Length: 180
Image 1: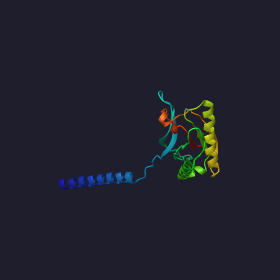
Image 2: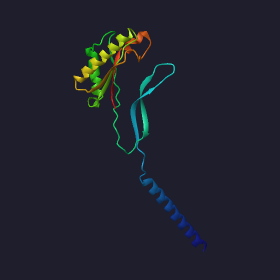
Image 3: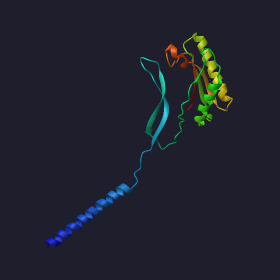
């Protein structure tokens, strides 16, 4: 009887092992629905107590809902820089702008926002007028090449990149962004 009960126990253990292996295999081979994740780049604006307001590109990772997903163009354009006191778009700057626009691909289909800026030199009234002239110069250039410009703004010297007088040239710029 000992041999018979030992054989029966081995058969029961083998059966249990087979059930466990089949269960594990079924669990591993059965597809598990995963939650889709979306990674996109958006502008994020935050306030800093000791410096200026900052707008920067940041990546967002979130669960993607099953509803309609709107594609986000995540292409950063270089600002167009201008010489002190003028709104002339030089050929080199125009070429760089067109290369940037081409690199960003689908921007020709999306409406653009063009914002002009100046450095702190000069009166507030002069800087406001000059920043708007710069924005209009770039907007006209883009529209003549088939781009849609929705808004044109002049911000004067309101949003400087730097307060270092050696780097004021960085403030004399036009920024281009796509509208959502």
